[in-house]
Amino acid sequence: MSNFSRRRFLLTAGATAASSVFLKGCLGNPPSPAALSPKAEAIELSPEQVPETSTVKLGYIPIVEAAALVIAQEKGFFAKYGMTDVKLAKQASWASARDNVTIGSANGGIDGGQWQMPMPHLISEGIITNGRKIPMYVLAQLNTQGNGIAIARMHKGKGLGLDISGAADYIKGFQQANGRKFKAAHTFPQVNQDLWIRYWFAAGGVDPDNDIDLLAVPSAETVQGMRNGSMDAFSTGDPWPYRIVADDIGHMAAVSGQIWRFHPEEYLSIRADWVDKNPKATKAVLKALMEAQQWCDQAKNREELVQIVSQRNFFNVPIRILQPPYAGKYAMGDGKADVGDFKMGPMYWKDDIGSVSYPYKSHDLWFLTESMRWGFHKGKINDIDQAKQIIDRVNREDLWREAAKEAGFNSEIPQSTSRGVERFFDGKEFDPENPEAYLNSLAIKRV
Ligand code: CA
Image 1 (cartoon, rainbow, N blue to C red):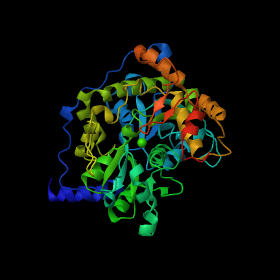
Image 2 (spheres, rainbow, N blue to C red; image 1 turned 90 degrees about the horizontal axis):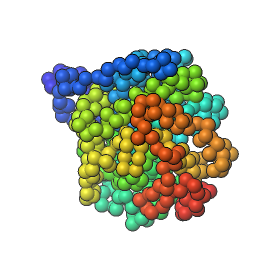
Image 3 (cartoon, helix red, strand yellow; image 1 turned 30 degrees about the horizontal axis):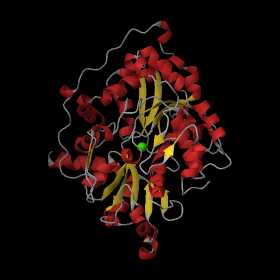
Image 4 (cartoon, rainbow, N blue to C red; image 1 turned 180 degrees about the vertical axis):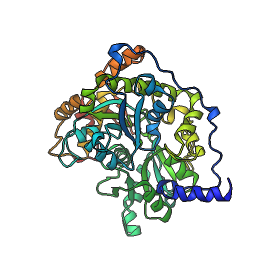
């Protein structure tokens, strides 16, 4: 890269704070279009499958969770099913995505897109939208895994790994030794990344509400804080974990697949009014997503996937930063063994338990049970029965099933709306038939 183009690149990238933190050295040549495989071809749709509209505006956040949406667009799967004008709209933050779905595409916002959980349920109930209820439908899971907990460099050698029970006193005593509490961040409160780090702290005997400061902070600010010693931990998703270790900003305590193997991660959810008006288009979107997810999970496609999503109009990060997580490779740092298992990285269609794409109601129930554990929505979501009623309104696994059947993925359709008992690294179990037993088994909780 010439000095001129490098300077220009740095100036451009500097506009995106998240990208500016890490740029080092030359970033390699742009991918050659010749390396890309052909796009899917349009198929002849039966009259009952022709979508009511060919357009939908879906928001996404430029992290690995969004890959199947990008691939559905770029490899022609949306167009294959008649959705020839899908607009993928990059969102500046989760709060922007929430605000944009609240106003809807007719007013310059979005119809739906990528969400952490249980954002669709909270938006439907008006809990994070100033009381304004925007009914939404959960339609598919986008991915499993691909997230993790990063620790600032200053805590090397203190035993901050998957199990922190041996380091709990160090974390709790941090205030006395340093004049401030141990500080941890996520990017949006009361959803996945907050839930993962809360689970991890509490499993090790650290109360995330009382023993530390845990708050929502933009990613770039968190990473700067980790560099300058004002931030201690970050619950985040790929490609941040790789960058934090590669740039020696810190190490990984755990990747999310170690905390809960094949856990539910982010989801596709669209406003109910759009889905109700466009049921065939909804199923067309789902079929395209399913094909994209299958494409993403084939190891032979990962190199091309990285080339596509790394582009400036999508994730805007160098290819070298996305390659390791997409191969399931994580340098953990701090003396821990590296992870090198394709199935420990992000997966999109199928894992060793079953379907990744199918939106199990039992997973929605875990998210709402965990919300109850932390006392998040007292007075709004009060008990398991009420949680189940909300899930029955929001989760449209029936549409996923119909779409999968129409697309011919019959053998991939789960038998039940429950994935069954879930197991965590610390031996706890969540039985969807008995969420109360799970809550009872937890030592640190607000219920
Ligand atoms: Ca995530």
